[in-house]
Image 1: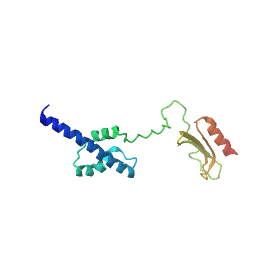
Image 2: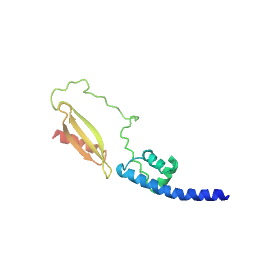
Image 3: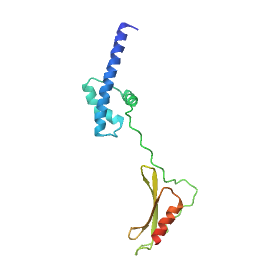
Image 4: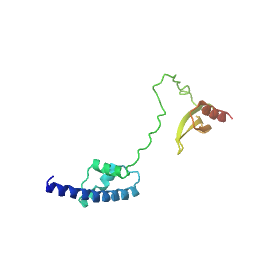
Length: 158
């Protein structure tokens, strides 16, 4: 190793430590304002401050620096896929599509939906009157079993 190379690499090591501290301070300041902002957007926002401090850092090194200091944002959990259109089950057609609804309780429609909670997902079965658009029966449970839909229907009939 040449003398010039030795001192240059030593200077770069010292600069990296100082650069890392400044980068982390800038990222923490930006995350106080926008805590869930992704790393690429944070880098874009602090780019001018880094330029003013004569620091040049690429995207990959920036990600590595944040990863080493546990400052990366965790990915959101993916939403459940609730619709599967490619199945071999029978498809039921809309029997009241052409019927004109004129009085309450002439026709009801139902739907299942999921609600995200801290403990997991809850599933709601809803029965709606098509004339008044009011919910006539509802049931919320932690599974998609048919008993939830039947309970909602019983509540609607009551």
